[in-house]
Image (tube, rainbow, N blue to C red; front, side):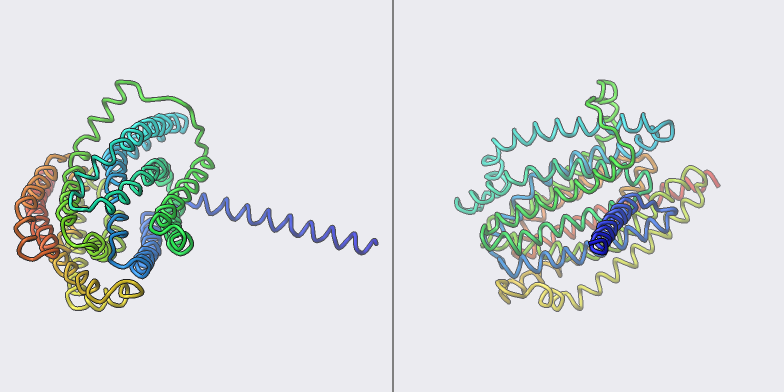
Amino acid sequence: MHKNALKVRDEIQGKTEYHYTMRALFHKLLHIESRSISASALTIGAGTLINGVLSIGRNILLAAHFGASSQLDAYFAAFRIPDLIFLLIITGGLSAVFIPTFSRELAESKEKAWEFAAKIINGYLLLSLVLAVVLLAMMPLLMHMLVPGFNKEKLDITIRLARLLLLQPILLGISSLASGALQTLNKFFITTIAPILYNLGIICGILFLSPFLGIQGVVFGVLLGALAHSTLQLIAFLGSGYNHKFRLLTLQELMGVIALALPRVLNIILIQINLVITLNFISHLANGSVAIFNFAYDMYNYPLNIFAISLITASFPALAKLYAQSKHKFAQLFFSTFKKLIGLGVLFFIMFAYGGEIIVRYFLQHGSLKPESAAAISAVLMYLNIGIVASALLPYLVRVSFILESTTTPLLTSLLNTGLYIILGPIFLQKYGLSGIAFALSTALWCDVGLLAVLMSYKIKTIARTFA
């Protein structure tokens, strides 16, 4: 009995030590801090690469399970309005204000930083919930305007999915605000894990829910991924000392936020108008056209997101710091990064020009996706590829314009982009079909980036000469 008692005691102690070790490991992972820009860039790049692989896997599974079908058309179309809410309020608005202000408040005291974060989070929750209720009621009208070419059955599915997806921007918005605070605290590791969980949620929806619920099961997977995305970052945020308080911005603070965010919001609106117009154009084409375009567009964006955006994200803090310290060194780093992005864009262009069809067949032509659909995806990708160098440069030039406090310049070039696309889209659509939409997007994008690059380069050279 004595030996058995000792054995049981040792087993309990072993389990306790194991659980303690696992909790300690989890706590350390949540609070890993990057000590340098290089470490931050490496962390971002590694996370983006893993997430990119999962995104490809997600699309392989979507193509295999649903093919270029009306169900997948409805799925992709349903994201447009929820994504628009997220992009306008978070990516366009609050991201331009939150991180700089949170950093400034943090320099004074953590208490002020937490209070500011609470006000922004409460404000976002209130605004997004009100918008969700309004859009829930208006969704049939909005979707009829957005995809007028969809028949009644496809339109009804799209409306149902879009209403479910209204939960997504609420979850991802709160998560993004927590992410911005964590990055300010140099906790990049946990912010790179969250998007991976998001894609894993979608993959689980495709594999385990869609066999029973169809395309609606994939949407439940999206919401599961969004919940995991937000939960992980909120745990890390709360563990960093954040103490939530139910306070809102004062009228004066709110007006300050709007003034800072407005140029960025307008720029995002113009970019999103192009995507809304694209969906409107494509909705009149054959079933599967929306899915075909989205598969090509996602494929086109993979290398950009993994390599170009990682380079831009890593260089941006250094550029901002150098602009305050040495205009000449700032100009050197600007043109050095500019050339690297052109080099990356050219490599991507060559890759898709010579291997685009092979890549599409290898990754997407499985299960329900037919060879003719794969050929259509390859054709759209070829015309999108015309603008890939410009796509690598655009986010870089826009971000640098904010360092220079020249927010109206990208706004004006975006107006040119949208106006030209509205003119060229119907012309090229009639002449080249679905591929014509991609051709029009690439042509308008080059006009935007070409003009923006000339204006920004001239301004930076002038600044460098003035402060030499």
